[in-house]
Image 1 (cartoon, one colour):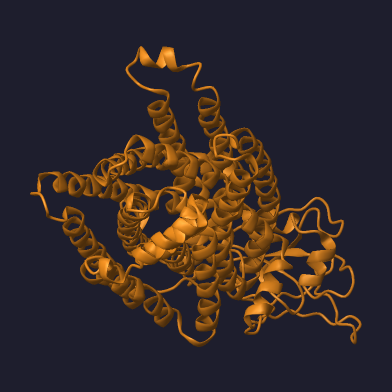
Image 2 (cartoon, helix red, strand yellow):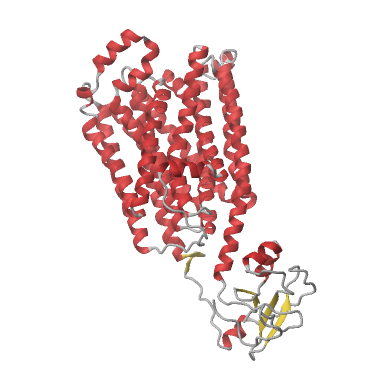
Amino acid sequence: MEGVIQTKGLLSLPSNPQTKIFLNKIPQQSLRQRLNLSSKPKSLNVVSSNLDGSRKFQPIPGLFGVQKPRFVHVCKASAAAAGGELEAEPDKFMGIEVLTLKKIVPLGLMFFCILFNYTILRDTKDVLVVTAKGSSAEIIPFLKTWVNLPMAIGFMVLYTKLANVLSKKALFYTVILPFIAFFGAFGFVLYPLSNYFHPTALADKLLAVLGPRFLGPLAIMRIWSFCLFYVMAELWGSVVVSVLFWGFANQITTVEEAKKFYPLFGLGANVALIFSGRTVKYFSNMRKHLGPGVDGWAISLKYMMSIVVLMGLAICGLYWWVNTYVPLPTRSKKKKEKPNMSTMESLKFLASSPYIRDLATLVVAYGISINLVEVTWKSKLKAQFPSPNEYSSFMGDFSTATGIATFTMMLLSQWIFNKYGWGVAAKITPTVLLLTGVGFFSLILFGDPLAPGLMKFGITPLLAAVYVGAMQNIFSKSAKYSLFDPCKEMAYIPLDEDTKVKGKAAIDVVCNPLGKSGGALIQQFMILTFGSLANSTPYLGGILLVIVGAWLGAARSLDKQFTALRQEEELEKEMERAAVKIPIVSTNGSVGSDSNTNSSTETSSPRNV
């Protein structure tokens, strides 16, 4: 049997090398406070139990000035022979614990289904609002600012209130089922009947009076049901992916499992991205073979929305199975339990936390940065592919390429986490986005002088800008899915439950649309100030540089805080695992006296906590 490290009246720790390293890393003042010691003890000793029942006391090096230690160990096999019990090894399959597999495999399938749906919804929402009659890519900044953001804030308020009254399982089903019902209803009811309730005539009259500069805002009214689909598709990404899935994953996994498997979740998810891209392209090409007068888009929309509904039901089934058959891990109990807070109190609490502020900075900075490039790219994309068939087909290829790139990055992500740690992994995404964004803006600014050279390869400057913008989006999104998202979700794990639940709701549901809306507001201001998006390009590039700089600064700050929280959590878990109280022993081997006794000696075994 191994020895135990003893202190008076509190706990014991196993006398192994990890424990000695663990104790020597703790500041002496902090250790005395945690061990409930009012003054500096003479020594803190290792008590090694012999097979005959006797015990030897040896001091620990570096603690309270004690030097020259000698640690005595008895092998575990001998301890077992003497009647000790050893912890049974857990069942494993291919080197992985079966309990871990029962959590990781369903989570991977859930992520697969969620991102399969999100790819279809993301590609479909762009086709609906950009190629609709009376609309264009200019609708996107207005839509994100004046529709998407208010609905996201409203959802956060509702979610916060529901989180205070519903169980986690009831909250999951209450949130996801309305999404599934809406997308099914849109494909079979709302879109086929859209011509009957879209105010097309009123929008035409207002456009004639107000002028073409109000095309974007009026298009929101003109195709309001398509805009509602756009917002619900955006919320699927922030609510179902970020809040529901990652919140559930953080609930049932440990930090060690997260470091090993979170990056690998994306492998299966990006296989889904590849297949969903092929699905979108298949239905896009199917419309070309239908006869005249047939609304091929309505037919393909019904097929795709049916797939979305089936995948949504599969997500609910996997969630039910994990909650039914997989036990939750034990968490370190925080000393301070936070009470239920109102919405405003929650926001004030989150705003007062530097940790949460840095997380919010990461999310907002990503949204602004990707939006500054993405909307400009989509305007070029519609100019190159004006018909819905061509636009949707290209988006299918784009999604497939994104899946392949992200799959490759996922294979490298675990190596990056293991070799370089959380901090380096968190900085890769902003670096990639900055470099590729600069290339895209440079091509737009200097595209005309390059036209003769590009024509030798059979492409125009417009098509070159479309391809370079697509590459920028592919590389940025692959870095986000493989590194940025796992880093962000791992940062939530050391937090207490109240901060974790409400913090995720505020950051993922509000800050994500806030970042996109912030980028849209910047673009709207630039267009109104400089006359066009092309004239604003140099300034947008400068803003991109500033935003990415703030992003990198927040990542550095969060890395320090995350490391400190992890060390604190490990310390608390070590304390909670201790099972025996330990008396303070003097340097001569006798047991230390209480404050009310002089020289009493305690020879009995340590008492259990």
